[in-house]
Image (tube, rainbow, N blue to C red; front, side, top):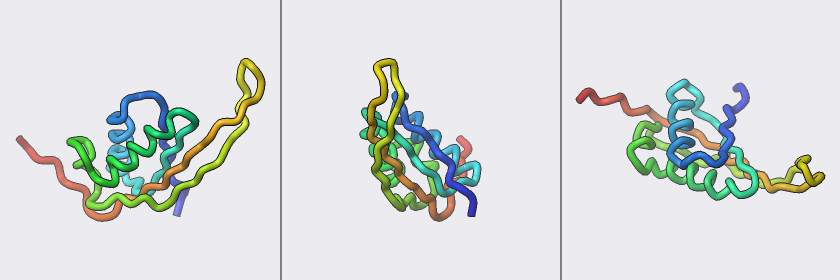
Length: 106
């Protein structure tokens, strides 16, 4: 199996990342990884939970089950204007299992 698609979680609204997960799974990438650094870690956790629970209108388009397969917590050295600093990094592996709902015609 190939590498997981990676979605970097930043400062955009939560629904933008949920939509990115839905789009990736619609494109056939049923295994993907959310990656967040520093202050955006809590947003990545929220995205994973919304997807896992299939909460909200956007998340209803996800497969029947979304599993959190694994979590990885580490730190990285980042070069900045004021020298090198250490930032926390969280990686969340997601897996979509089952059929994806078909769009309903109105």
